[in-house]
Image (tube, rainbow, N blue to C red):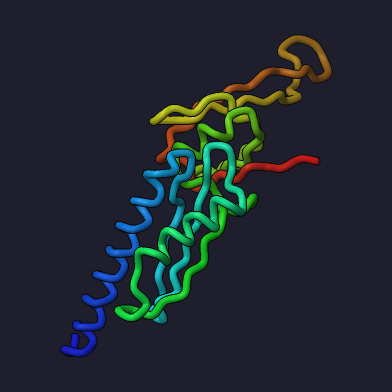
Length: 167
């Protein structure tokens, strides 16, 4: 890296760590909210994606936005800021998100390329439990029967999980 690039790189690292610090402080005061993603591009556009134990409302986004803006100095480093809630179709990333969605239907893609759409009935710190009903051939005789299925999946075996919204 040339000197100017290196200086810019370290300046951005310091800026990102300052933003992270300010954001962490703001979230500490609002324990029902949690950070899903923080990114800062080369033009210093700060993008914050939040989720909450009972969702995220507009006021939550405004409060976090103000907290970040009030604790950063635009004279020192110019920036733009966007604070948003995790979209309905956004994949779940944190254990806390799985826990808040117990009782909802998930579409889960596993690392072994299996796809399961089922009700999330349990989520702890290691795994989730999905339950659903399936039609399978009877063990004795002809025809099919409805059977209850249950599957535990460790988080490391989940490639992607999305909440299915039904109307």
